[in-house]
Image 1 (cartoon, rainbow, N blue to C red):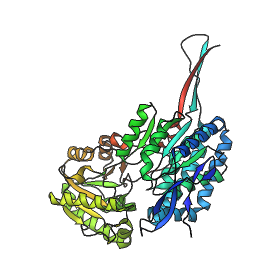
Image 2: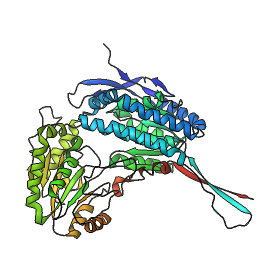
Image 3: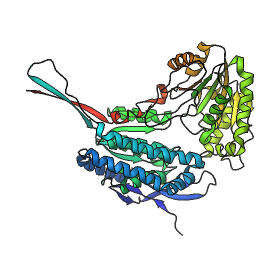
Image 4: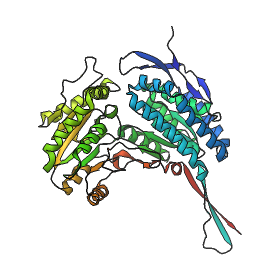
Length: 475
């Protein structure tokens, strides 16, 4: 019996490439299916298809676009079980994380549908009498969207929905770990009535990543790029785009700090930090990575942390331990080993908590992480979190900001004035007061600063995919 191959989608038609790559289950290591690995020729065909489709899609009426988006949202809901199985198999995600992904993806599409008719220009009054001007808001053209595997439906939908709604066409470049999830996104939009070529799907083997990505970025029909993923790869994409003066939206890594003030609700803070650290095995860019605790309550907070872990139970710890591959497991073990060798201690977990096949690692809470340790600076992207003590506000802010990253953060205190003061001082794209660091919804702009990237998804998403054109004329 032959193994199924996930096709590319070009001009709304499935296309099986000459070469393929294998996709394995993170849980068992078993072969799930193959993915089509696009060639340069396949990629060029997809670009030309999107460019041709742009000529008519940009003028599609808002009501027709809206109806397509609403049907797509409904399809995400009605095909829930099918799409859920793809994500569970390809990414090893627990059912709760899968359900959250599908629910929010449907909400994103529905929210964007309601924003389509809001696109408008302006008619400013200009200096010269007898003359007028208008400012148009126009789509760019073909957009390259590169989405990761860890939240494939949320991040995949987000990468294309806003751009399409603004009148652009798009090429979705799938992760080699989750090509069937990306295929499903495109299939949903096409079944909802999206015209041919408006959204094309490209995937490739990891060995082809450099040449395919470089070809996409360099092609003159690609007008803007968005990338969600690691800071290392984001820098490469930004550098390549810069050679051609192409704008980029980047949502990259994080080192999410959570400041726990001495008057905080410690039970609430502990539970939010534990879930924020270990949800989806810590494989979320917004995960809590540094818990910064006031010295006066450290002993009490440690007790609450242990209580929170016990309350969540072993099933949570077990689900949180599965990583996408063994590389992530080894990385987390190495980071914790380095920290412990330099004086840190383990409040929870053990360096021996790795499964026999090397795919799972139990959550670890490390106390006393400091500047000389790799864990202090490096995004673990796994079930590892640091607990660090501070004495006053100045030190709390210094510890929170002592990072290359600036995506998200949290503050726990009953004093709203202090909360706002700390929130203003933290260098991150979002600060959540008495809430966990993981927070994303359609009504809010989402993005980072520093090495966490630039540009915004979310509520300001349509503006990212429109550019202005000034027209002046004599009355």
